Amino acid sequence: MPKTEILHIRVEPEIKQMADQTFRDLGLTTADAVNVFLRKSIDAGGFPFSVRRRLSKETLEAMEEAWRLARDPDAKTYHSMEEIIAELESDD
Image (cartoon, rainbow, N blue to C red; front, side, top):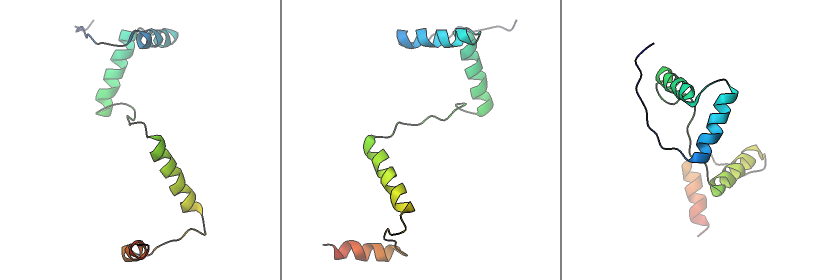
C-alpha cells in the first residue's frame, strides 16, 4: 500500500453528514472521494468541473432581456459604434 498523508480540513457539520451519506451510497468513504477528487484535479490541471460565481438576479434579468432582443426581428439594430453613439447623444 502506498504511503499516505493525513489531510485536515474544516467543513460545516451538515455538509459533512450529507457528503458522507452521498459517498456511502456510492460505496466510498469520504476519504476515498477526496482522493478521487484530487486525482481528477491533477488529470484536469485544475478543478475537474466548472466553478463559477452565481449570477445576481439583476444580471440574470439583463441576460434574459438580451436574449429576447436578440430573437426579436423588430428590435432596433445598429451597424456601427458611431450609430450607437449618435443615438445616445440625440436622446439628451
